[in-house]
Image (cartoon, rainbow, N blue to C red; front, side, top):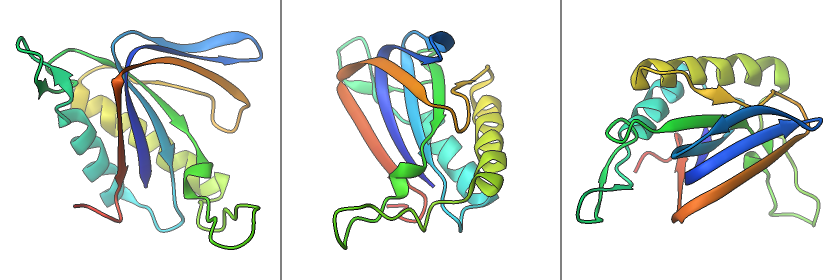
Length: 150
């Protein structure tokens, strides 16, 4: 599983001109699911994200987590995070999970993240053409990959 975690002042998603998700301070998470991903990846990643200390404390140092600031979250499924670009100019998505495998894992990740945070996590619409808008705060953007747990 790969995640691009963006600390935001606000973010929202529209599908066909209708807002389907809208948050204030928190994270916009782009989530890519790979064929080999499973429950261990979900648990590890959701715990890491919940406790990721990238919000400013009283002195402005990044010492506070999403839990500490009562932040909100939007999770967007994005298979293109597993694009292979080594050969040619057209990306290959052979490592990305097919929708029938990816969607249940995406939903499980969202539920697990909700459990860690103790609050609702908003989502885009799986497989839809979404328009994502955000104000990246910092900017702070963190990449995580459950296959590279350093």
